[in-house]
Image (cartoon, helix red, strand yellow):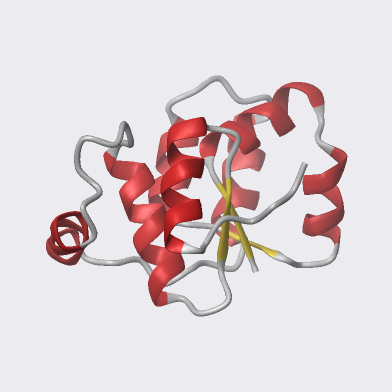
Length: 122
């Protein structure tokens, strides 16, 4: 399964992203509740419908903040230029076997690469 980060979704909402559309059509994309909340902070067309669709997607199992903090320390994820939502997405990929993170963010991509959870999509 693919967990696309906010940058991928924003690009999809603004310009369309055929790769994401294909994955969505094939039910290969999962969502994280923090990601929906982050996207809700932006300008969305058809806001109620868009948020309802995002909320209805299959969800990864989120990780408690305490465990995310432990992961940050144990895996040395501090000072690597990622944010808290990014850390939650990483943790979710690690505890949901077979879930890979799709990002266009260089720093998040480097961290995902180092953990072996980066989806190599265009």
